[in-house]
Amino acid sequence: YFTLLKKTYNIDTDVKISEEQMRSVIDKIGDLSEPVSPLLIKNSCCQRAFLRGAFLCIGSMSDPQKSYHLEFVCTDEDKARQLQSVIQGFDIEAKIVLRKKYYVVYLKEGSGIVDLLNVCEAPIALMKLENLRIVKEMRNSVNRRVNCETANITKTVTAATRQIEDIIYIRDHYGLENLPEPLSQMAEVRLENPDAPLKELGEYLDPPVGKSGVNHRLRKLSELADRIRT
View 1 (cartoon, rainbow, N blue to C red):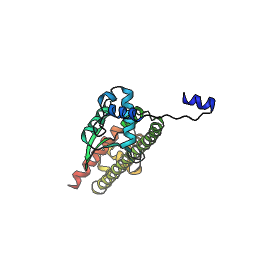
View 2 (view 1 turned 30 degrees about the vertical axis):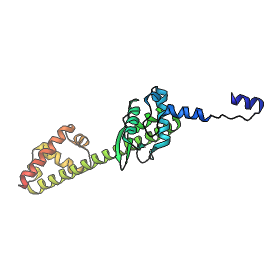
View 3 (view 1 turned 180 degrees about the vertical axis):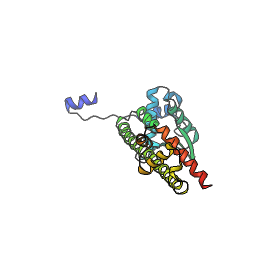
């Protein structure tokens, strides 16, 4: 109505509330030092507004590029319990911790914080956080894969080094010519191809054998080297 007046007649308008009306509103809200009356946050829309207001007044969120943490700092336990209950009413996990003289309601899961931003109807902040989460998850996934591959390579190199050491020990203290043909051939192929994986080593044998066959022969050589050492 006021917008129409201003646009149509170029009249400056304002909205005021009388002192009596103000007292009536405060009486309905109740004592601000106490938890909010359940009657005021009975409906879902009112609960969403309540959470928005709570976040603007006592809420904060850490830099999501470093960690996921959103919290509300309450002055007493009853308010914290009420806030936690409202949040959990939207199937979002929230916990409470006592920090000095304040009760802190907090969320540490990125998905929970996203859900809370959705409940509070903060779509821009939600999308920014989701984009950061996607980038972080992709980066973490790549790092895990690289670490896994690095560990596998290290394991393979370590195993190959031990196999070659065992074969050389057998050659010098027993003689490869004294080995059964399959083991003698396996020893020579491994010495000629120190970096080759098991599957590739099997293809060099005559006749070729599979990865499990190569592993079996190398294990036999290792056991023989241990017996010679003792």
